[in-house]
Image 1 (cartoon, rainbow, N blue to C red):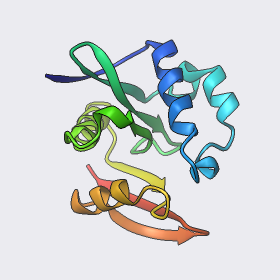
Image 2: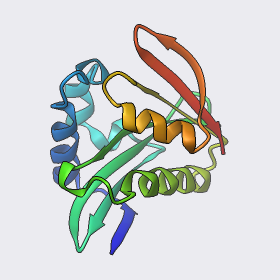
Image 3: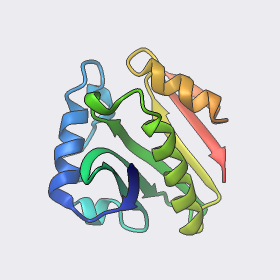
Length: 146
């Protein structure tokens, strides 16, 4: 049984973020990553970090970063451990993130992705109704009104 909840278990969050950062081709998604890891609580202040658990074992994460505009947030760090993939957990994590973002008062969620590296995730985002807003050097910007 999967459970997704907001978490301040920063050691588990760092572990998952670091594992995600090792995906070949995803290096460009981790600009200022050391600064982010050094102060996760501050970096995601006004947002949240959600962890997914299956039988109390962490399987994935997603984060909500408050942007300068109080109505907008950025979804970051959606990651599902390889051994837990194929169970629909990415969709569950995205839905939980959107519900949490609404609860926090945000009206729009945006994020960036690299379709050449994360094709499955990119296709999931499109199926869930995220709109493409632009592409720069292989990095696609997407958004959805909440």
